[in-house]
Amino acid sequence: MNLKLMQISKLDLALLLQLIGLVLAVLADPYIQTKHRKLLLFIAALAFGLIVQNHVEYYLDKEKNDVLFRTIVSIIGYSIRPVLIVLLLETVNTEKKRTVFWGLAGFNTVIYLSALFSNAVFSISADNRFLRGPLGYSCHFLCAILLGALMQESYSRYRKVRGVDAAIPLLNVIAVVAANIADWTETGIEPVSYLTVTVVSSCLFYYLWLHLHFSREHEQAIEAEQRIQIMISQIQPHFLYNTLSTIQALCRIDPEKAFETTEKFGTYLRMNIDSLNQASLIPFRQELEHTKTYADIEMMRFPYIHMSYDIREEQFELPALSVQPIVENAIRHGVRGQYNGRVRVKTNSDEEDYIVTVEDNGRGFFPESVNTLDESHIGIRNVRERIEMFCGGSMTIESNPGMGTTVTIRIPKGDKNL
Image (cartoon, rainbow, N blue to C red):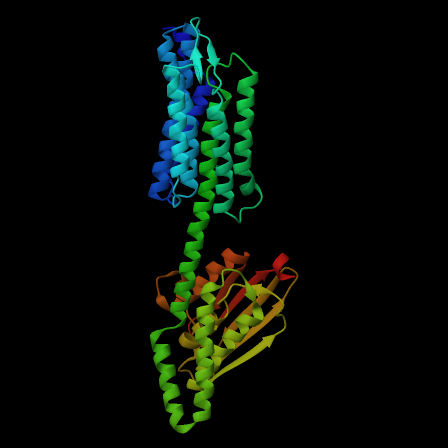
């Protein structure tokens, strides 16, 4: 065997490093599901097999070895390519059945196996030349169909992709087509074909593309979980029980006020439940209405609590349940049980931000305790995280025991808040 023909080139090393990087990334990816991980590892193994097949075929072509062996190696190469595309289809959407596509890939293998006893697809001449038959482009036509299906499936599965995200599947298909053309027009390629190089790179790019969507889906799941945690933290069992007890007592002494409280309580519950579906920003006026509804219920139960509002800016948006949890925290853990307890909500703006301030003259606390596992501050932590995540804003807390608390929310002025 001519060792010079079988030596590893710089290109081979680059391709191997890509595949190793792909395998390590897939194994370490915390967002990827087990079924996706298995598919991508199988894809990497087949891509490596395609590199080896190219080397063996190149060696057999130069060395004029056994015709039968070269025929078998060529059949393997033509059989792997459609299978790789079908596996990528499986990766994009694991829920769909691919019976037709797997059937076409299997039929392609059967067609190329006929080269063992027929010249219909290809043959190897006595002087070791590759001769394409009338069905010699079957694999190419099938791959074109599968690539079209892959691109359609990619955009169908992730319909909201924009910018660079939307370009990756299309660029991969264009690269594969260009590589095929390059292989047809250029002879003497050593030893890995343009198509194999493109297939290996496309597998890596497709994984990166899928990873972006896997991580976004994970973030969306976390956001949904946060919204549920917020709602649960706002609708505490003791609050429900105490409000219903208040309504029950009012039914005897002041039925009209009991009716008003029941109506406000129903509105409060509806707003909390609606917040679960609020993935985007909402108008400040909507959040203020929710806050006032909650505060009115608390003031009916505790008449010594006083709420005031100084609203100078309201034409901006912010995440749902941003102000109401701060006011609830101020009432429940600040001024409740304190004579002449006061809570004030203010809004204004400067050149860069809209500013929402919630002040109280309550018991106060050490701001560092917000970062602990104390359940009394879970609402504040959630508000801070969502303001930072959804609109790039910030939240600061000024407080000391016995000195009251001031919470300041800053919402940057931008395209959504003009």
